[in-house]
Structure formats: structure tokens, C-alpha cells
Length: 317
Length: 248
Image 1 (cartoon, one colour):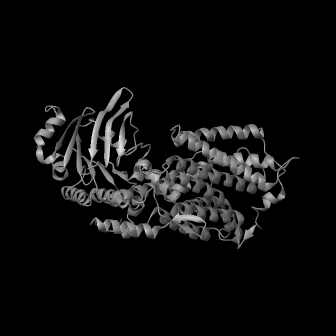
Image 2: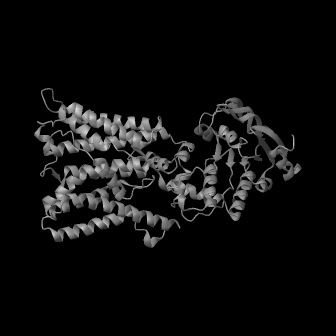
Image 3: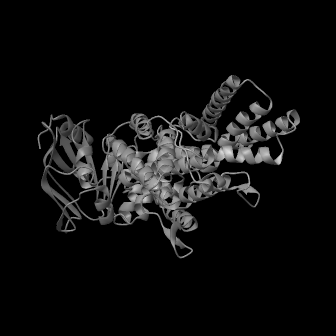
């Protein structure tokens, strides 16, 4: 690759974010205020965690459409478990939520590896099924009466070193998943699987376990996002998480993840989530018609990926 | 002398199709054997049974004098049977040393608790094996996708050598290579032979096989059509075996 043009998508998008921040701080007095920055951090935390979940599966040349439904599923069962007369303790409820999420991921792994379903179909199935389960469990209505402490975790005062707890969860997730991908053989196998599954198998890699592991990690991260969402909403909302999977995929792709597999990093998803959240947040502050916001995000996504493709083709020549 | 590898009456059926039919074959130490045949003659199926990708329908495999069952690629690798496939079986988005160690990464303890990859060890080991085989690759941190066909083939070969191959199987090693690179790969085969590593080489290129092999085994429609010592035969006779105009 040419050194002069080694500007990768991730860096380009990061620069884009900085430019936006400068323009927005000129355009709106409140943009760079402490509360607004904290708000952006809390907003991007959930999207960032889901983006990292997508990075994991997309690197294996898969996809996970179910993350939004997993968020809703965890949101509802957690809300139901910690309310009412027979309320469980919050840590126990969270452990149960993670267990269910991991089992959903295991189901994806089995469907994709053993039943040879395309990941798109397998996770489209669970996305639809889980949404139905959520509506059945909740009867379609919100769950109220969660303990105050749940909301406190995501509140404006819940800071450590000046950063919201939710944002810390995102930072820890980026850090841990980066380490797994860079420093462990499991991480290496995830890239090998996306690069050439046959080569991985012939080299003696246990591709079944890697597939199971990737989908379980992705769904567990979606479960974590569900717990974070519950804290933010302070109630169970059956319709929550709708469309989150697409924002998560967009965050991953904006961060340089290739849908062809074997390319992408959690740090990239972080940057992607930052840009998208900045756009959503900035449009509100600038009083842009919210209908336009989606159009802006879509255009940026398409342009970024087109430029990336063009750059790669040129590098290949 | 005892053969390193011997297969007896090996057969592979896919449903009604018999891809390999009762084939016998031996490979002796330090010998290069060419496995020849037309498309669909059963050459690839044959080596895939030795390398553990397919399980034979019937027949026996003897390795160093003992009968063995090879259930999966890892079994073959742990015995020292290394295979370089036609499509090279390299992960293009991983770098050179990651490919050499793929599936068998060297790890070290981090905080006495976690097994993490030992990048510098793998990098240095890869460098020394490439040097031993006189292979020149600019940076081992380059992804395979950035290498030429010959360099990829060289990486695949050095992976096998690094893992101490007792028997090396090469499927079409010179297909898709430039002329200079073909020569380089064939030189590597001779280097291995001089180090007493037996090699089975599958090729369409009669010239390649005649330049490196000691013996050729010809397959035709799943059966063994014949076997010749290279010094005692001619390309014409071998072509005759391949197309069926010469009986064994």
C-alpha cells in the first residue's frame, strides 16, 4: 500500500467527526457544553457496544440482525425480573440476562455452522422471533416500577473521572475486544475464518468453536447493551431496539469494517458510533428537521463505503 | 527400505461415483513422486484421503510401517504429513507469520493467567525458516494479499517445513505462477529432497514432473493406470498412460 494514501476509513471518519465537532460548536453554543458532551457519550455507548458486536460477526463474513431484538428482550425480561413481589436482585437478573443472550448466540452459531444457514437468514429469524417473544411477555405494554438504582446508573451524576458509567462500559468493551482480537489465537481465528474458512479448517482450526464463540460474544454484547438500555429508559419498553441493528452495522462499516470479512476493529466501531451520534445530536441542537437526519446518515454511509471501495481498487492495481 | 507412506487398496466413493478405486502406492524417504492424471482422474481425492480431508470408503494407510487412521486434517498434521493445496489454503488477510503459525500459534502467559500470542517469537521463527529456504519476502508483517503467486507458494512451503514435514504433498504447485517463479518452486522441491523429505507432487505440467520427480504414478478414471521410474520412461509413454493408449 502506498504510504502517502494509507489514510484508512477509520482515520478519515475520525477526521470527519472532528470537523463536525468544530462546525457544531460554532453553530450551537450548547454543543460543547459539559452536559451535552456527557449526553453524547451516553447516547453513543449503547450504539458503540452494538457496533462492536457487529464487528465481531462481520469480520467472519457474517452479520447479526438480531441485536436490536436482543436489546428489547433483555430490556423486558430484566424489567420483569426486578419488579413486582418476587423481584430478583439486580446482579442475579443481569447474570440471567447474559445467560439468555449467550444462548441466543449459541443458537445462531448452530444455525450458521451446523445447519449451514446464511447468517442473514438465521439472525433475521431470531430477530423476528425475539420481537414476538417480547410482545408476548409484555402483552405489548411498558413495564414500570423499576428500582431507582437502575436509573441512577445512567444518570447525569453517575460519573467516574468525569465520564458517565455507560461510556466506561463502552471503553472497557472496546479495550477487551481489541485485546481478544489482537492478542489471542481465538481472535486470530476470527479473522482467518472471514479470510478463508477452508484454509482455517485445513490448518486445524476448530471452525465450529470459533463460529459458536463469535456469535455468542456478539449476542452477549447485545445483552450488555440491553442492560444499558434498561438503565437509560428506567422501564421495559417492548418496541425498544427497533432498527438498532442497522445503526450498529452502519457504525461498524463507518469504522472501516468490510462486509466481505476479515477486516474491522472495535476501535473503528467506536469511531463510527461517535460520528453517527454526533450527527443525531447536532441535528437536534441545530433544529434540523429530524426527517433529514436519517437522510444525512444514509448519504454519509454510502459515500464513505464508496470512497473506501474506490481506494482499495486503486491500491490493488 | 521401508516406505514412509503406503496406501493399499484405497477407495473413495461419493454416492454412486467411485472417485478412487483400489489404488496402491508407496513413498520412500527422500523420494519425489509425481502423481499424474487427467482432470477427474482422482488425484486430488487421493491426496485428500492422505491429508485427512476425506475419509476412505475402504483400504488401508500405513505410515512408517504402522497402520493409521487419519480422521481429520489435524491428525495428518500431527503425524508430519503436510499438504499444500492448489488454492494454497492461506488466509489472505493475515500476515506472513500469522499464516505460518495458523492453527498452531505460539502463546505466552500474560500476567501468569491469560494465554496471549507471542508475536515476536512467531515473527523471528518465520524469518529464520524463510532464510533457511532462501526465500525473499520484504516484510513478514505484510498481508498475504499483497504478495505475488510465487511468494505465496513459498510461504505455504515454508509453513510445511517449519512444522517439520515428514512427508510433503503439493497439489499443482506451479499452476498460476510465472516462469521464474515456477523454477524457484521446483528448486525448493529439490532442496527438500536433498534434506531427505519425501514429496508427492501433483501436476499437469509434464515438464515440471520430469525435472524433479524420481518416479511417477499415473491415475486414470479413479484407477492406477501405471507406475514408471522417470529415468526409464519418456513423456510420450506417460501421456499414453494418462489418456489410456498405453496399458500398464
